[in-house]
Figure 1 (tube, rainbow, N blue to C red):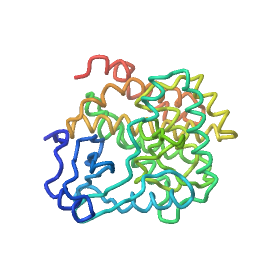
Figure 2 (figure 1 turned 90 degrees about the vertical axis):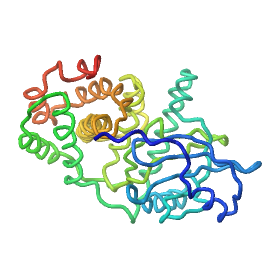
Figure 3 (figure 1 turned 135 degrees about the horizontal axis):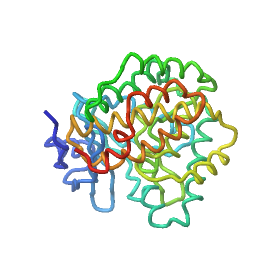
Length: 323
């Protein structure tokens, strides 16, 4: 049975948590939910403000979020300050970064798109200059393959395709063998325009970094420049790759294809399992990115699998009139 989209009614234990942390009687207002079980509320107490994250411990382990926030802060990046937390209750009180996300800022003022993306590239390039965080695991082939498997596990059956799963895994094994393993940096894994905040002091704030792993720098670059949630033109993508500086084009294509295949599976799972239909609108864009990545010669085996098992009508065209 599909789960309903989480409501934005504060958890009943939130007022007691806030009171214990010095925020008695604070107003709790709905802010947002996301693709996980986490929910966010804006907390107001006179002139003070913060954001309350509700991350039910039976579904979400918030320790990686706390550790990565501390790491980013220690090396000079703007993660929300942690004001208080109770992991057993699944509640974390964090700094409020405001409402101006990069996605909306660029949509409202497209003349600033290039400059804003340039700043986001500068940030991720600066992060890549630091050694990978000591507390995170490795983004290795086993993780890449497990993520890519979301496509045959969720997407294929949802659109009525009976595919060769073993052949899919074999194709990815061959392609991932061409991926250079160096350098290894902190990979935020969801670095895109809806997770980057434009702060009042001109800095960029980072959100949604709890799943960070140590891996190839091309991954976060492709996450930003092949954004599932907003259109990034090929011209802007090319310009920002040049701004980043030398980057392994083979790694960029391989990790782009891996990420986009994963996202097609995730968005289908959000629809089928969790009842979050809004993600279906992004599928055609993700398909366009994926097909651009598959055109790279290093993706020959994976491209061949898609050509054999996924007809054109079951790709972007399918989502024009989703089931």
